[in-house]
Length: 189
Ligand SMILES: [Zn+2]
Ligand SMILES: [Zn+2]
Image (cartoon, rainbow, N blue to C red; front, side, top):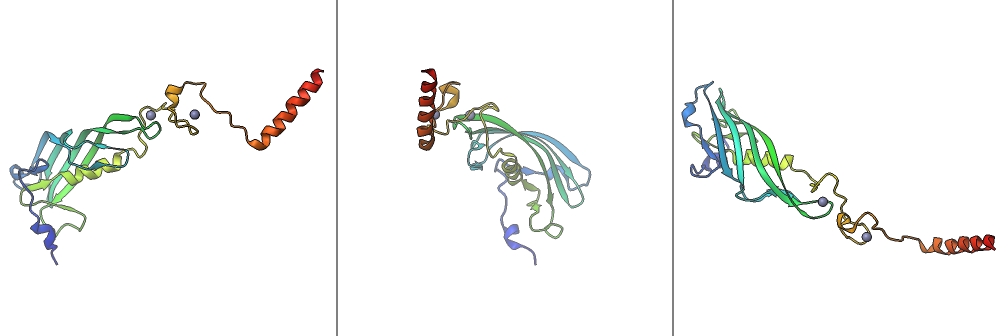
């Protein structure tokens, strides 16, 4: 049974991530190289880092007509903004992901998770979104040498200096320590 919900959802040709494949004419072997600059979609990220909404995403892609559909391959580069997982400072960075997706002409050839063309149109946003989410670092750091925060008091170690530390003597050892220093004193006498 054809999946009707997929077919009734038509793409908006004016949406930034919707690309027309009209000029390929469904002739296997015809292809087009494109460089695009598109606004990042909203809510693209994980807990600590993501691509800011409307940030400029640079795409360098190739559309290639094959028997079953149109193959899109290439790269996308986007800025990142987030928080260092160690020191919690804000950070910015960049991500580059590979894109590869076959958009099928008909859902007769495609399985449930495959992407479909809507007439001549394809929507590259889900492909880009999936690639970015998989590539995002789970624990982004502001620098590989970031010392993070003091586990005792939470101060930022990079600012507190190398001498920062806490006297951490367990109460049970404290009495013993007193004992040793008394002995030391005895020897000196
Ligand atoms: Zn940091
Ligand atoms: Zn501390």
